[in-house]
Image 1 (cartoon, rainbow, N blue to C red):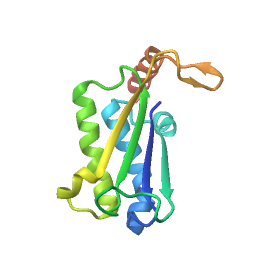
Image 2: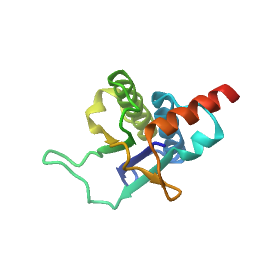
Image 3: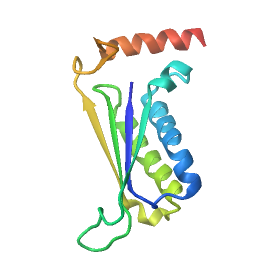
Image 4: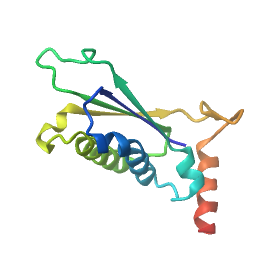
Length: 143
């Protein structure tokens, strides 16, 4: 049950990138989390696009757009290898959606937040990582 949020200055994404980036980032997250490619898991991968008003994002150096990707996953869902792959692919996805060259990759920051077990609730219940693993195994067996 991952969540991903991209925060960008308004107008920083291409027209096509703005249309596709949320689903693309959600797919990247699910792939690196190792979730089954099923309708249920795709529906649980929430993706947000937050566009900042003009003039509300800058650095001490320049006004070139910066991109912040915040990922929230259950603790234990991502190994170090999976986190590395997620950060690489999320960065590439954002750069593509904004038509920014790969040599400007430092303009994309990816923060991976791991939610401690027993602190994620959905549908009025606590969702534990072990429950998600069992659910995923069941859906993989059904596929």
